[in-house]
Length: 264
Image (cartoon, rainbow, N blue to C red; front, side, top):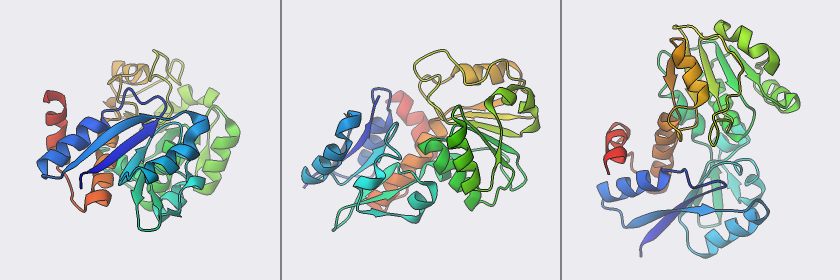
């Protein structure tokens, strides 16, 4: 019987996960499909139940449901419990099991990352939680959290023994960091940036987990001042490859998919 997988979120029109997974299914001769599903916030629980009843074998979770979905799953992997967020769900004999592959998927692609790297994480939502958990697992201790809502930033910083920085102080203090990871949705559907008049240097790495558009205003600001920039494509592919492995037991080729996905 043909299997099927999905990605749920709101919005979902920007997702290239379906193309990526469909290519991997074809490459490995797996009879399966992968579909995007727009879920209304007040229909999340019903959607999760429906996916199971309709025979879905597994699905990805994107904004804004990475935290909200947790009560509706039957089991959580340590990666999800540690992050407090879920981005990958696997069907088991007893129900749904949630994982978090976001952090590992992103950090594996950041150049020169080491335990001494000074990192600033902008945001405190589901993606930020997965990244903070992965940084902790790698024993990277010099981590600072900032967020528009100070309470959420404080909770995340306390959980991982990270530092806290007020958003108003970030632009001037930016050069104190080696790597800045932007995890909010600011810039996805607008030309806005979470930072006003930031100061970048050529020694810094700027990461935005948004991949559509490929260059957000945040990355434009960093690039114009000489910083090395990365969009969310590396994270998308990295977390997607880990999800694909959880579903199928196969490790897909991440390097090849970068060229394939844009020429298919």
